[in-house]
Image 1 (cartoon, rainbow, N blue to C red):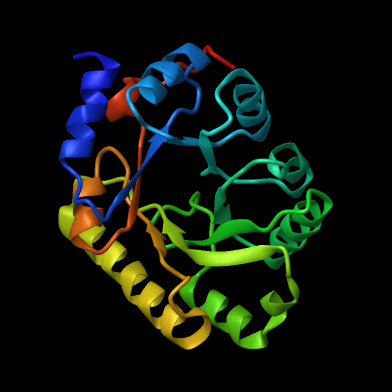
Image 2 (image 1 turned 120 degrees about the vertical axis):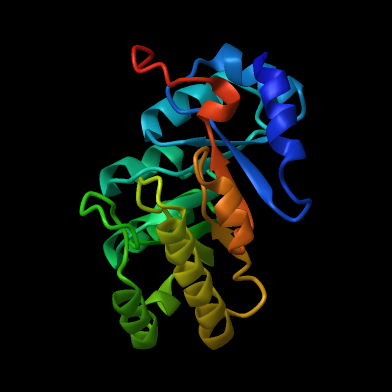
Length: 223
């Protein structure tokens, strides 16, 4: 199947209320353009400089999402145009995003990344850590950031019961924090990738991040 056929298959598998982020990291601009021409507008990248380069090459109505770990010294590359940063894992990063957003006269939407997977390599806040941070109120100082929801990555496993448990845990946290701190604009729960997005949708995801099921295997030679 072609990339466009893959896109149509994925879209057909998603409920209308679930947003698709086409994960284009490592794939060239011409391949992204094919998917863009087929109607997809939201693309996810995990390297700031790569996202900036693609932004320059591709139509500017693309809505770019930063889905990978973001170092504070790289925020400046994407602050002029990024729509949503999924991977916010510290107050220090929030402070830099707020500063860079202000420099560009923008308000940048973010998601708090939650660490729920069993692998130690996964980044993000522990649930209790985020609760304590929000209770402190430190986040309220950031006028150029809008907190939109949560993101998580489940354990890489074939154990669907475990994946379901992890996604459900984050969904419950999402509901709790929306009710306690944020209200209706805290509306985005980014969970699920190619191998587990159907489970994520069952558990209440409003956004899924799908790459290889659309673009095929990642091309790590394309830096």
